[in-house]
Amino acid sequence: MAIDRERIKELIEREAQRLDGRTQGSRAMYERARRSLSGGVASSYQVRHPWPLYLSHGKGARVWDVDGNEMLDFHNGFGSMVQGHAHTAITDAVNARIELGTHFAAPTEDAVVVSEELARRWGLPKWRYVNSGSEATMDAIRIARGLTGRDTVVKIAGSYHGHHDGVMVAIGSVPAELGDREDYQSIPYGAGIPHAVSELTIAVPFNDAGAMERRIERLVDEGRPPACVIMEAAMMNLGVVLPEPGYLEAVRELTRKHGIVLIFDEVKTGLCIAAGGATERFGVVPDMVTLAKALGGGLPSGAIGGTEEVFSVVEDGSVYQVGTYNGNPLSMAAARANLLEVLTPEAYAHLDALNDHILRGCQDVIDRYGFPGYSIGVGSKGCVTFSPEPIVDYESFKAHQDAELADLAWLYNMNRGVFMTPGREEEWTLSVTHSFEDCDAFVAAFDEMAADLTA
Image (spheres, rainbow, N blue to C red):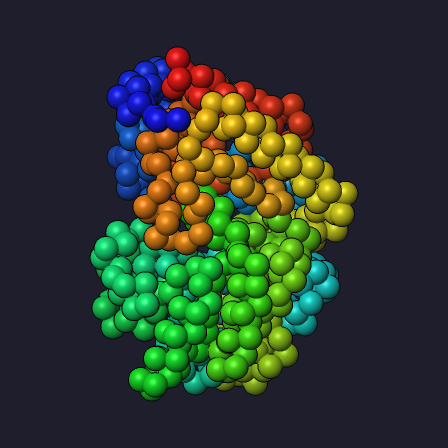
């Protein structure tokens, strides 16, 4: 099917006007917020033109904005709320903990229980806590450097691993600026990142173990052997890009051969695509794993798991892994309830069934209308990829993913009661409180968009 680009622009204008008309309360809140909040938001990823949407509350699979619009939540806090909003098990645990004290900067029993459960799920014996995904990846890289005595970091082009300087490299760059895939340039993501820091991080393409091996071997020859490879086992910042068969196994063998610490960044996949995240789902065990988002059931928390060898440099005091709020009692109480009472085997069976259902529904729309794209997902995560070609890495994403269709799909969702992450890079996250009927509402919005585009 050939997409009429003028029709897309026409529908974007129509749907944007409709959304603006029903979010005047958010407009008023924005005018107030921008006087004290930079850009009117708490994070630059919350910016939206002409104003962001301000939410008031959520319950289960639904959220409400300040205008009173009720929406099914497929955004889920950028994938953090796989438990659904205000889950009773988590709110009860947090409320009980509040009465006992909210912060000590000292360990509690809940922190021990959570580490025991994470060790069981991931098969990695040692754990430490942080308060965000950015902290998790930052500390993991520091530990890897301390263990190996090396400075260089290898990452996947297009992957986001938090907002610290060392990993804000080769994200959102135009492929032509990155250069040849055998020798990507270390382009910083925005201003304020020292050149000396970005040059320590080397990007390689996803799903290409050969390219990674050749780049690492050149780094070794240059006297810059990597301390670590940090990567998502399944890319979740280009929609959803799954690993090709044998790819992760090849990376595991390559890193082991060169004494490189393999870090799976599971901030997006951990607890969302299986009980033990991508490590369980794909059957490849890294040296370290980083968690955040879904761990705390809506409270800020994160964790780093690793082998005995990896954490030996923390336990002997040569690497300082610190943080006043690490293992905060409220976060640990929420994480304990989340792991033991909410994200159960039955919950994962439900999430798998829901995602299969929504993926089939979206693919049916694609097939009926001859749309250039496909549905793809795993566990609670999924998306419609608006591309005539399979997306396997950052270059193919930039070359083929249709940004205008992604923008239009977001507007259709928002105007039909489906709260969704904006942008062609994002995916949906289902929660244990979603139903098959909720998934049907998402598919219905997509169907309406396809019908309007082909009318």
